[in-house]
Amino acid sequence: MGMSRNMWLSLTAAALSAALVYVLYDLQRMQVERQETVAVVVPSRFIAAGERIEAGDLERLRLPAGAYHADMLTEPQAAAGKEAIVPMGRGEPVLEWKLNEYGLQPGKLESTFQLPKDYIRSISSGIRAGDLVMLYSSGEEGESARVFDKPVVVASVKTSGNVEIDNMEKPHLLSLAEGNKEEMYAARRDANGTIEFINLNLTESQWLVIDKLCKGGTTKLVIAYSPASFERMGQAQTNMPGKEGTER
Image 1 (cartoon, helix red, strand yellow):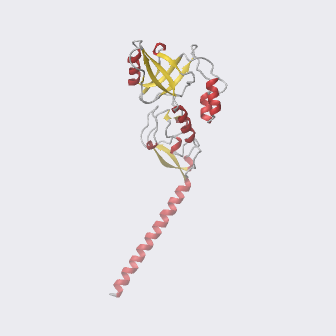
Image 2 (tube, helix red, strand yellow; image 1 turned 45 degrees about the horizontal axis):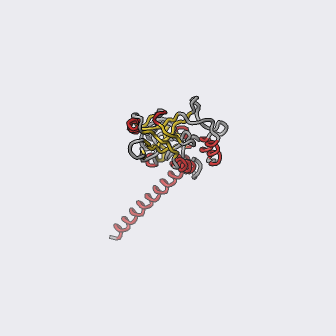
Image 3 (tube, one colour; image 1 turned 45 degrees about the vertical axis):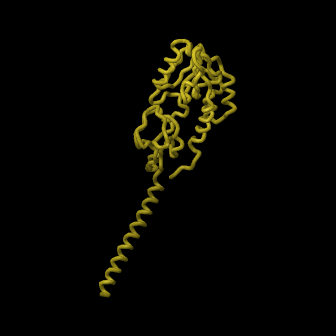
């Protein structure tokens, strides 16, 4: 009886020792792997060109340190809220140049439409490319109303000579990227012309709504600068690479 009990105790001790050795080996292996790899941001699904990237579309993948490139993002916050310039496959490292900060390109379901001049009653003079604007209908019949619940993106604003309106010495988009509010507003003030043409990124259904409203000539659009453009600037600065530590 005593021999049998001692045998079981010996076998149990040996099994526990083997398990402990395996756990220690596994922990050491994981530590070595973490030291020799870098966690980079990758899409958790296919992302089409022009599609806005959400935080839930991203995950991290560990790559060998030798495969890491400085253009690869290591923080999901640096990509969330931006748009994809090119298609990105699942598990493909997200590179900084593949992202569009200011959304000048139309989204996945959008196209860029130039609004006919006779559709417009007024345009806020401070509007520039990359801004968000609200559209209002104004006509002889019926009350004025908001056309869409959410603002839309301005792709470009141009003079009668087809020149983009901006301060050529200090473009407002450059000031926006640098987070320089004073220069951004100075660029709006010191513009090089009067807005004659405006291009908006719209879905097909949005364009059809505008066309139906305005093609009769009795209703026109009032295009107003949206304060959401200013909030967008703050989000862009918060999400810039380098604001958070890098996991290695």
